Length: 232
Image (cartoon, rainbow, N blue to C red; front, side, top):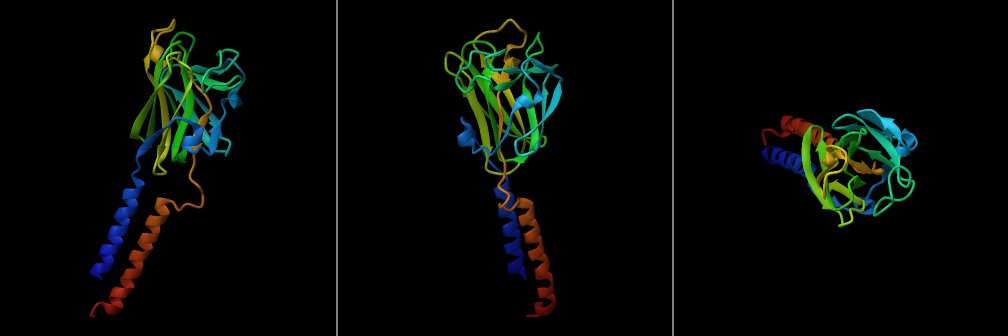
């Protein structure tokens, strides 16, 4: 019985340890292994105003919510209200612009059902080199941050982070450095984010919670064994 209990506890420890993931920086949707996307064109055409919070639906029909850290923002199209296209941005892409006409309103947070990772192309509204950051959360718990610096021209870059565990529920995009201030206030909060890419779990992969239930069942099976073999 003692040996069986130790085996069960060891298995439970390994399951919980494997569930505590680690992050890796990804600089492309392919590297992220994204299998779902959120296209912002569904929120309206170029120059559509957005409130402080907004919601959208992914290609896989998952509900995604977004929020600016301050005030409001809008949807802008590359080549129309945002341009010219460069780097990871292409003409006609629909972007979320963190700006209310007076100030930058970033960082921008996106919340979604549990995934392995998230990422998007991002660009500062101010010409010149900038550094972007993505921070992933599991609920209210920060899982870590990753950063990428653009080229000198400030072309749009892709920034994403991938976790080894299926535990990510929120991604926050921000800028930590820009070349110089722009005509709006809060230049670090003045940027645009392209299509949100998500790496969702494959349905055939057992959830850690399911494994824990299985281990709990094994623990239950060990109880009758003691009743019959406890005197051995």
